[in-house]
Amino acid sequence: MSLTAYIIVGAALFMIGLVGVLIRRNFIIILMSIELMLNAANLNLVAFSHYLHDLAGQMTALFVIAIAAGEAAVGLAIIIVVFRGKVATNVDQINLLKW
Image (tube, rainbow, N blue to C red):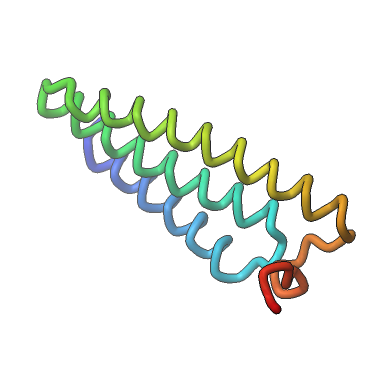
């Protein structure tokens, strides 16, 4: 496959994730959309790394995957804490940080 095909798929995945973050109000869907955007960036990093015969993009993708795993763990912990306090997954209804 050509580099252009990977870039198009990565851009499409990123746009789907961006639309999911901007439109949806469910906290779980927003986290999944952020993960989709990170995976689109990883796809482009690995594609460019393969195209340029350089391992820097693949190593950066591994770091992004590790950061995404930490983000998912922290996000799920926040969701569990919010669900224990009240049952609301809508981001607009969660106002725990307000005075």
